[in-house]
Length: 405
Image 1 (cartoon, one colour):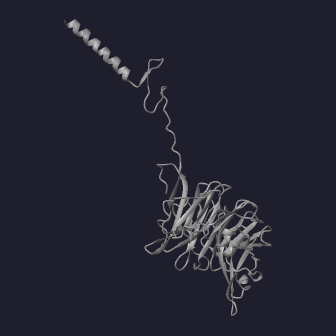
Image 2 (cartoon, rainbow, N blue to C red; image 1 turned 30 degrees about the horizontal axis):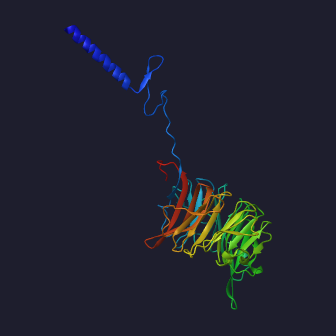
Image 3 (cartoon, rainbow, N blue to C red; image 1 turned 90 degrees about the vertical axis):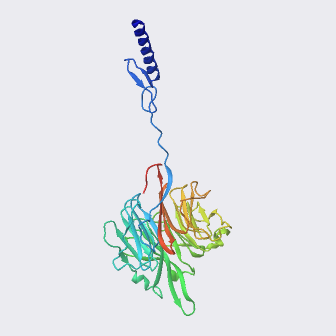
């Protein structure tokens, strides 16, 4: 009896062992060792690598600690970490600097003669030189590591005009030596009252010496120039009020005037061109009032309309347009109800699509810059509790689940 019980016990244990081996996630290898096949391994016991999540385009707001009552008008980055944004405060100009891609901003607005200017545009060069211009007709510049901005007041040039008044709207710095300023000179007479005419200034030695390249005393045009762009030290363009455009192929020694009537009929109805950009001597874009975007492939000899006026948004306008290559471009501004708008193209402007940043309400987007098709910044202002506040957006490609500032 005892012997039979022992046999049954051994038989039961053997069956349990077989069942355990059967349920184990693996099998014996040639050496008799059990190899596992689990959730993270294959039949050979190797760990299966989970596929990396694809990065997605993400907009983040970067202005949480900036001063109140500021309108930002211009932005420029020399790389993915270092940038400047400039604008206007209640009683002084504002210059904000970042060295971490916009995660934090430091106000570095002090100049060599105070801080009282309304800054409209800024250029930031790879060398670390920043150049900014003010509506009051002053230029200020500084290099990385310097304490204050140095200010140029253009006293001798002001004497060329009856009222001595200049208004700067835009700057373009090709390198540390070649800079251009676009804006207007203001004169007054009893007969005509105040007269505003376009003005372009140029330096070829980093601001030591300046010349008037487009002389308001020698033209019948009446307008501000609102933007200027050069692709090299010879080819450049400027645009402004009343649809007027200027073009040079000799570095600004001479400028050809292209009046608004030479552009397609849709452009004639909308007075101001706010922004122009080129990627080479032939291919460029310009944008402005009415939400119109025009494109040229022959250096501006002719223009085609890429975005027509939307009758449901008659008050739309673009303040800034920027391309990183033939295909990828951005245009920012405001809609009819003054909400911020961002448009993007990935095919050179054949199709423009509105980009949803997740923000955009009660904002006014003033300027856009992108370093590559995926990484860029937009600046402007927003209204909070009835007061204007600075607004900075940053777009980049982010892997889901990884925190971005």
